[in-house]
Amino acid sequence: MRLLLVEDDEHIGRALQTGLAQQGHAVDWLQDGVAAELAARDGQYDAILLDLGLPRQDGMQVISHLRRDGYAAPILIITSRDEIRDRVEGLDSGADDFIVKPFDLEELGARLRAAHRRAMGRSQAAVVHGDIRIDPAARQVTRAGLAVSLTGREFMLLLHLLEHRGHVRTRAQLQESLYNWNSDIESNAIEVHVHNLRRKLGKDLIRTVHSQGYVIDNA
Image (cartoon, rainbow, N blue to C red; front, side, top):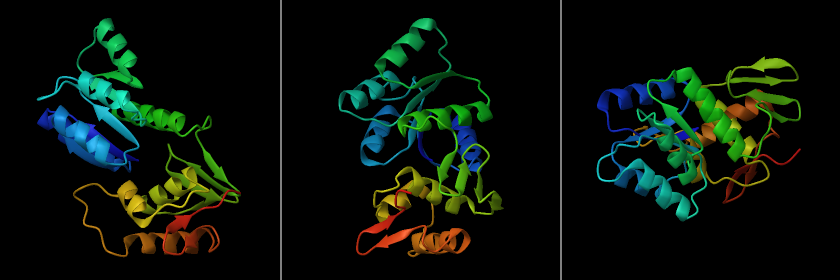
């Protein structure tokens, strides 16, 4: 997933960014509420992890402003505030989950996957397309029951295309889903990933739409 992490504590923010990246996510990290709101509006994030006590603008205000304007991506509050009234206010403001620090990184990953799954309208954890099955939690792909070895970004690209199957995704959209702000992106990176997925999973899986992008058609 492409994530926006908003955490003003340097130590916590860096640890979370590193840990989430190790889980296979592309993570942009910001440290104040105003910058977070602007980034959320400009970027295509699968989810936002948001602290509440932020400089310049409190996290509750960020949530209220975004939801008021129709922002639909999952927002998970991560905070040291543990009063019931804070939980109620956060969830009623539009947050999808409320996680009190300190928390386990594995649990955070599971909560992210659950929120993303709900946002995508899926009830099952696995993503299935024909004889291809993806387990997002285990980061495993099988075809006809046999394991297929993918790189981290190949896995992310395949999952993204399958979650948007039937809809053409542009090269820019695919790049944004795979890479954070600090990534060094080769000009032909998406083409290379698509080529490798076709080689490993079948040349007809991903269709090129001339001058538009790529799509996995509905089964």
